[in-house]
Image (cartoon, rainbow, N blue to C red; front, side, top):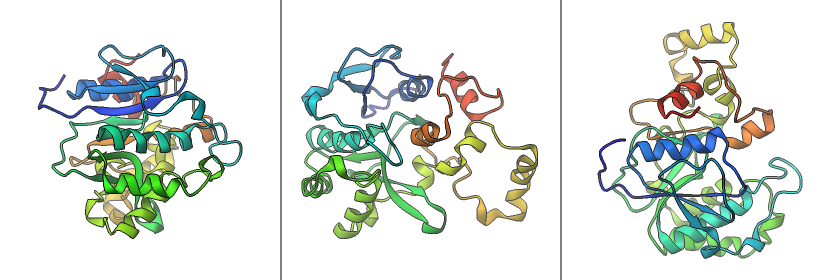
Amino acid sequence: MEENLNLAPVQSLWIGDKLSKVEQLCIKSFLDAGHEFHLYTYENVANVPEGTNVMNARHIIEEDKIFRFEDGWGKGSVSGFADLFRLLLLKKNGGWWVDMDIICLKPFVIDQELVICTSYESNYGELANNCVIKAPQESDFINYCINELAKSDIKKLPFGAAGPFLFQRVVKEMKLEAFLVPYYYFNPIAWKFVGDLVLGKMSIINKFKEVLRPVFKPKTLSGRVIDRNSFSIHLWNEVWSASGFNKNEIYKPASLFEKIKKRHQIK
């Protein structure tokens, strides 16, 4: 474990009765970096790493408010509920929120009250995302987002409408662009490259192309490279679900996923 620098706790939510290797890795990576990890749950959860602070999610929002997407992208997912949960949690507690597929690379030390992460979205550039956020209690930004969601039936909103798309719109309306941090801070690997760059599913030909990319196409490295400024990587859980990737499977030893599992002793 890193030396504790009086680091702020990180907070997240899990709905279900057990954690996969991805969620275990998420928690363990933050604990190993010196953070407390506050995991909010509605039931007893198996496979929680030792040292995790398990919290009662009912103190934020009642269990009967949980809902899942019924169709479309993210069908069966509780991500819409998690979008709402994080807002209510940060309104009450403030501090850091991370999704359960965020893997810590170094302590989260950023000296500003409001931190809004971004992701690299190819032709759209860098856009606000809600997978990592830091906010003070009763933040104007968080309260604005909550008030916007209150105008609609959140259960009927499409995937992302209560999360990244909401953040992108509110950042513009409140003129909070100064609080956006570069995509490579928290999401250096774009969602579309999870299979190739995280799980090692890239073909030999494409691997050769990636080796040559920094020389011949350096401008196309965005969303493909972790650098020394990166605080975390995002494993993009919804991509795993949509692609049929097994979060408990053992992948190629040289894959980034297996290397990080080994570093944090996730077996």
